[in-house]
Length: 440
Image (tube, rainbow, N blue to C red; front, side, top):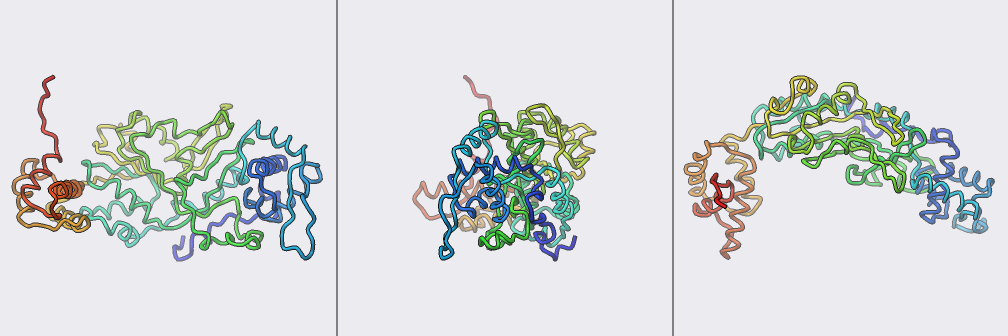
């Protein structure tokens, strides 16, 4: 794919020209419109169109069909000299039908996209089609001081769109690097509000995971006229590529559909929400589930490019798995995975701590950012008397921790921020806990 052409123009879902283009049954569309009008109390065609994410002409066509069935009625007369739109409301029969539909599923709002149509859209905007170059990756991580050769390893791993395992000592920027990987991608994809499979609606868009592109940057998102003549399927939202980041809280249940028995609605799984983007599993090995169990859950998706989910009825179905999975752990891979699992993780990248020269660069950058003036005597004291006690094992998080400690000391003493050898000693005491037996 030529990255000179905007991704949004290349991969836009085809616009809806007639109701049959939605791939939904007339009954489902009518029920969702009735539920939406009932719950949101909208009357104008343009407001209803916005609420159900359909172009105005198609929305009007739906309204007309509901009027013919006696489920909706006009609230007034539209005169030629009037600039306002005609309003519509539910009849008593329409309200009864809306309540009956809500008893089956509380879902209302944007019309869903059939799963098969979504699969085609995922292929048009696949993360594996991104042509990531060295300048793109270096630009996204320009604020980081990285070990020599790390970009050489990360580039092919990220550019492939396959799974990546980053491992190494804690506090050396694995999480920051994972976030930099996402930033390197930089383009946008189309995310549907919801999906439809076997008559069930699965909510996909999540404002915590998906960041919409500003309205003035998205085609067809401004005026009612442009909405009516949309250049893409209005059931989708143009968003930046998503990032799902989890840590020790990740459980296997989060990787399945979330069914709400009260509202009788489904919420997409975490990896389904991350489709077209990055799924970062941070602190692997600190979850309740053993790392091997988590990897086993992803073996088929990572190899085959699809995942298998299940409805409450037990029916299983395939969904696309177009996600760059980044695992980050403080453990050696051989300690938490068997060789079969490691074989299925395409790239393994060790993230070592900085050397002394890199450490001093990081310390200078952090101190400047936090407003703590550097002091040569203090730095010499740190390097000559403190780090020898831990085998000169430098870590990227040390400068941040030490500078924050020094700031707290200065604030307590009521003096301007400054670095002194004795402040280094006091800060160092909080960096590590003395290994000793506590007598109870």
